[in-house]
Image (cartoon, rainbow, N blue to C red):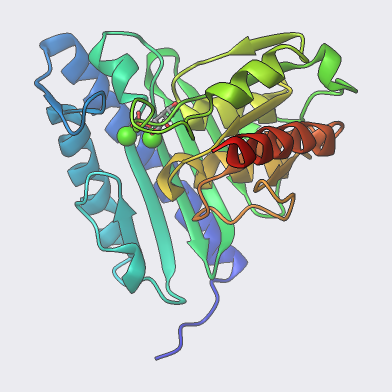
Length: 278
Ligand code: IPD
Ligand code: CA
Ligand code: CA
């Protein structure tokens, strides 16, 4: 069965619902953080809390009620599987992006909701509950923080760039853990940050507070909404090969576009050297 492409009016409504739902889930997470959370290990260093599950259940309930024909892929498994998506609209849901921060009581975490169809990012909302930041974007209509239109920075080169990255949860088990890349970029840029929340990293590139961000093993729920923010703020998002980012690819490079190829060249070189030495 073929599915029709969502029209502009429908996408606008999707974004309205996403923003409202992200605020509601964010408020739930915030309450949980103050009332006390139950923490479990999904892996060696990969945590999940009862709030992740409750926020995801809330988001899925709201989205499936508003859009019964849409597919939902949630990090905690409450939605359907990526393999069933086809050409249906699909929501990528990260109920709490930055769970490690959240579990440690740090106020840096976000609810990230991105809508795609046929691999095209249509709209997205990234809500940071603890300071009420509401980042949102709709394809072709710009990226915003609340009512404030966002534009990427004008930093011209890597030498003067503030760059962020992150490290996947398999980092103890593989040399392909971004540490070589981290060292190489750190020695070339003005400063490095590890915020611990991929969606906020991307939102900060869109806002121009960061000049670039990369990470090597992300999931669509980490990046779908944030990548659209960067695109709509005039930046560039790609994979390691420099081609336009497919949210399902994992490797994500985002920047203001001024030194993207230079950053990619470093990341490619480091990977090639590691593979040659392996
Ligand atoms: C993680 C965060 C982190 C990034 C990890 C992600 P989670 O998401 O976005 O910044 O480095 O790769 O998995 O587990 O907190 O939702
Ligand atoms: Ca995440
Ligand atoms: Ca998460």
